Image 1 (cartoon, rainbow, N blue to C red):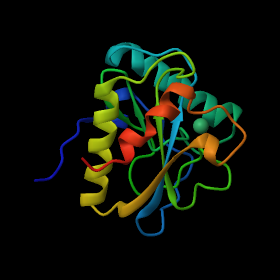
Image 2 (cartoon, rainbow, N blue to C red):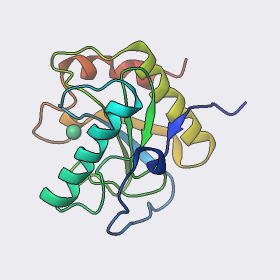
Image 3 (cartoon, rainbow, N blue to C red):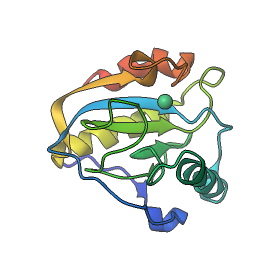
Length: 167
Ligand SMILES: [Zn+2]
C-alpha cells in the first residue's frame, strides 16, 4: 500500500512563484534535516504567515530562487510543500545537488520534536521512495553533519535515528 501523507500545497499556503527551478538528476540520494530556528506555529492560518515570511527572506534577502527547503513540517505533523519533489533545493551549501532538504518548524535547541511530526516525515520519505523521488537506500543526516551550524538543534538531532529506522 502506498504510504499516505497529507501535504499542504504551495497554492494552499499562498507561495509566490519561484524565480527559477532546477530539476534533480535522478532520485535524491540523501535527506538533510533542518530546523527553521524560528518560533513554531500552530495551524494553517498561523503557519501560512510563517511560510510566506520564510519564503520572502529566502528570496529577497538570501537571493534564493524560492523557499530553500523541499518540505517543511509543523508540530502537529502537517507537511507543507516547499520546492517539492524532484527539485534542487537551497538548504545545505555544497550538498544541494543530490539531496532533499526537510525543515521542522521551530527551534529544536529548546523544543523537542513531536512524535507525530517525526512520523509524518517518515511517511513522507516512504512515499518519496515509493514514487521514485528518493533512493530506497537514502542516507539521512542533520545539517550540522555537513556544515558549521547548530541546525537542526540538539533535540531534533538526537531524534534523527527514529527517521532512519525502517520500522
Ligand atoms: Zn539547516
